[in-house]
Amino acid sequence: MPSPPSAHKNLSRCSSNFDYHPVSPVVDDINRIHRRLQEYEVVGRHLPTEANPTPDMYRMTIFAPNETVAKSRFWYFLRGLRKVKKATGEIVSIKTIHEKHPQKVKNFGIWLRYDSRSGTHNMYKEYREMSRTDAVESLYSDMAARHRARFRSIHVLRVVELEKSDDVKRPYIKQLLTKDLSFPLPHRISKVSSKKLFSAKRPSTFA
Image 1: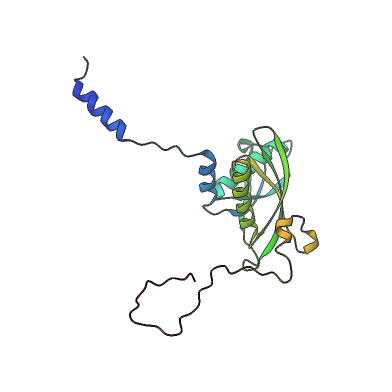
Image 2: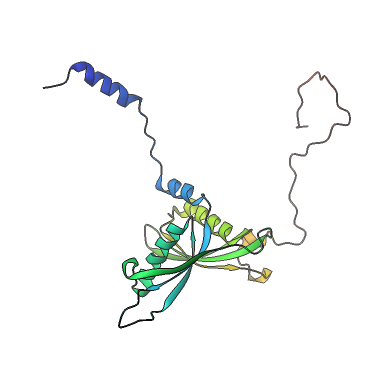
């Protein structure tokens, strides 16, 4: 039995008032990453068997938002490198690595591999940040902005602190290492010599 016409009108009225704004996958990945990455050291191995009672242990440094994602990435890489999967393996230990000097500005070099729409590419990038996790966060934001790379398609291979200025290769980092570095002050606000209770004109910081 068909529904009365009034029901169709109400249904169409409700559906027209509902606005759907889809979120880009890249933006969704960026929002997920900016929940703050952490550096984890994950150690795992294959389960002991009669043929191999003492299997080798594998240690990886993983940058992830939480331990669950860190374990998932660990099994993803270990399955591809050593043919060990989660069903036949175990996590021996997982711990968070903290920055020793979080108040010091440092230069970092990052080697990475990412999958684009046309193939797999190796890259090297440099960042000037306070910690290793900050440098990796800047890497994910930079790759999403320049190459539309998702979090799942970026594999961080190595993160190294560049202690010497000669080790820095990228010009956008070299320009920040000059001895007499100065920045312009385009909008300087001069202090008022005497404050008044009332003024005849609206205050402005532009001359």
